[in-house]
Length: 409
Image (tube, rainbow, N blue to C red; front, side):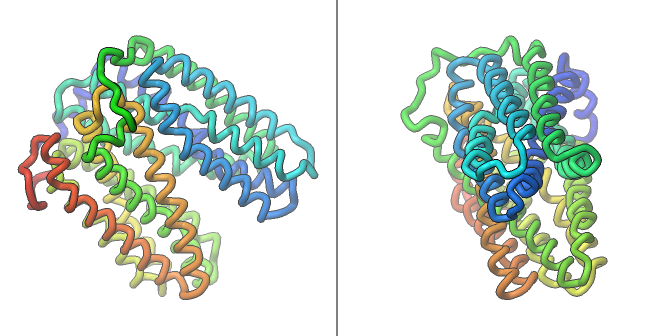
């Protein structure tokens, strides 16, 4: 197993700090949009039902468009797609932010849908560049782990920033500002040499059906669908448990501890070589993720117990996600890498939405432990998919073909 000797190499590679910095800044507004649209729509319409429709329209539209935009990047390059997407997104957000109270709900839903459809696939684009920047496989895994770790900062600071700007200034101004930051930082990203130089592989045969024609990629997509459901269910379960214990406001700090755990896990993964190399290591990580989040069933009697367990559960997130993304370069068909990364983003967000919906119904009818039980079950689904797809993964990653077996991660 490699150790922290790789970390200096990935950060000293030409252009990596600026590329990562601009991409993280560009993705900070993405962590603000959903909650920002929710609170702004509620203020304009005076209805949480309308606000839910607006937030849901954005989430569904962005999930649907991500693979389509990724395919466009694979055909025409990053610059045009990212600039057009960021420009349209900024315009729709600024427009939404300047709407008056009483604006008809179809207008709000339509603008949210346009925002989601145009949101540039920044995560897929930056991850598609990594293999061209870092050739060494060990260093590449470390780079994916480091990126997943730093990305946690956007989820920690994005929602509070959106809510804070809304309280101090206005919800509309918060939305408009997030759109302008997205546009400016996206322009900074496409100005990076690695992004400017990236060109589609026009000679590569493009399979009908795109990147999902690859069986191994379908396995990774389904694994992320399951883990996304874990995250969505946990989000709801923590909120419901905090409310049952008499302090809904405590959900925020508890979810922050969850993000801190992921941050710590990502740092450890970066120092230890970047995560799983083959299906066996991925299976161990997914199993730990499922067990850690399922264990929250036994914590609903105490805020302290929730905090302690969710910290440990969170430590499995970044290593698992980073390991999956690091495998995409090998499993995606030639010429479809950006689309492949986009499918993973869509799978995770779709899983989170499904997990939140099911866990919400369970928490309402059966209580918080039922929501955490569903989180554990969703993790079990992800583990089952990883086990059933182990041969597919190992054929392309070079691992020992067959059943999951313990090996260093």
